[in-house]
Length: 268
Length: 283
Image (cartoon, rainbow over all chains, first blue to last red):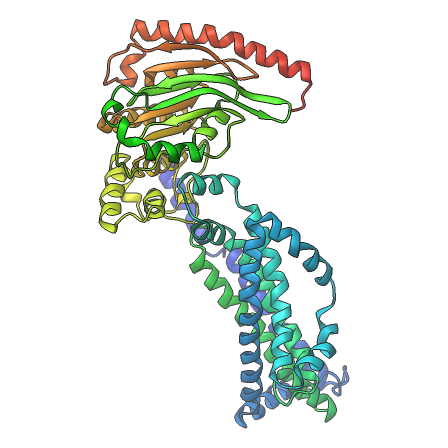
């Protein structure tokens, strides 16, 4: 009984105190707003050079103009489409190869040295070669995204399968699972959490590479938009391009996290 | 061994009439060596149809290796295993209840229990009926849609047992299935296992290091020697069935058997320890 009374007397004192989670969330919303505010003031008072760091308000104005003419959407759509196709072209073979490498030692022996040798090459340095092979059109852009997605997905799929507890493979054998069943019911779902990490890394890499690829010989896309802004010295437009790329990265992370939650409902 | 089993299945017709007196499992001169290390040495034993057969031995005596050979997960170095299959039987030869967590974390309780039947491409109606039955018998029906991480250790092991029984094999192999459970849960699961087993009296090979458990569950208990694993002695358990796991502990016959097995086992545990100490701590 006395415990009840005590609890009640404490409650009012607690009510004005926000939880640590709420506090952290408020801080993380406030900090970028504060930064923009400081930036804006600094730009208006001439504390920073607006030729390089235009005021956020003027960047926003440019964003409104670019989106009202439809120019911004056209570039964004072009980049997203390349990103998506490149993701499939690079991701699907990587997933299949990675899982098979995880399951089969001979296959791993064949491909492991190839992947280890080519993985450290900076992907951006392949762009001239990609332009040579695939030309200035869509092919070279899609190829660049694909190659960026391929490595992290393949490497993580292999690691994911190899990390699966051996006992599950024994269960599969004891219950007479065929090769295909082992792939479908044990290797793929068992490796999925690690594969999802690879996919997230791959999409990030794809985003980097699409921006670079579009700066060379492209006529559309956010990378092209940024490059064109440099040529015309439209710094605001450059910032709009960077801002939209950042938003795409952020939204893709949210989407992938949501997909992960649906695909891997069994992970705590 | 797989070939041996397949051959057995084809020569079944002549065996159909004598299937009753034929042993369910005939292990002859079975040995398993890993390099210079002999894990199992010349094990010969017949196990009758419907027998609940227990294997006890000190850790590292090769009892798990023996079971893995029976499960087809390892090949023997020498000797043979014959599993007699009823004429025209479509049932799988064996299903194993593994030691520790072996149910798939990415499948629901239902899908885990249905795994064997699904791999055999059993008809949907049969899967529904059989899996439903065993989940009901193990008290898991209301957790059918749950994932393993939502279950306690005891419940996970129930799923593993349901999965093996639902597969309806000729023989059930159990590798210390209750060793990771606390005493209360162990008792409950032993009771449940006996109840389910009484329904259809499948041939069971059950490994344990728990002597009480061996006497409670088994029809016969095989004691194995320490490194290499040989048959030391086989002790029949004449306790009446169906058994009440709790009542048994007051039965003087139970106490006598536990004592007998323990004294036989103690020498081996001692010897295993000396062998380990002689080798240093390397394993």
